[in-house]
Length: 96
Image 1 (cartoon, rainbow, N blue to C red):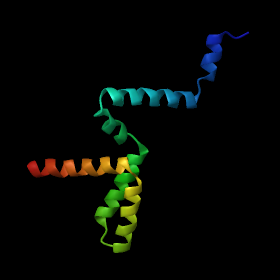
Image 2: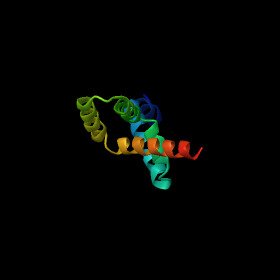
Image 3: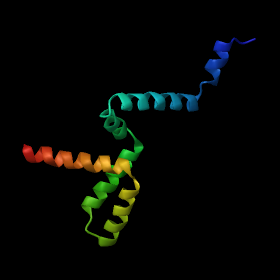
Image 4: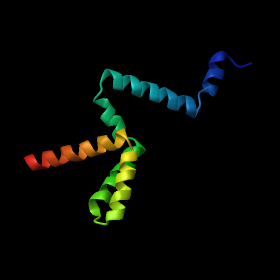
């Protein structure tokens, strides 16, 4: 017969791990709001929004600009963070 401890270990799968990590990340963000930016940068959504912004900046095709603008807006808060990070990089470069 398995002990409760052994059974609990077996029940701790990927879903429980993800939920646990998410809970820790949310706690960190409450304690230090600046950590939200770090967590956002680590997300796949950041990469997706960054790629769309790069494509937006690189094209002059009006229909594609319209499409990319809407796709970026749909990214919500993460797109705002990506855009603000981009603006901050431009500001820092202008100071140099």
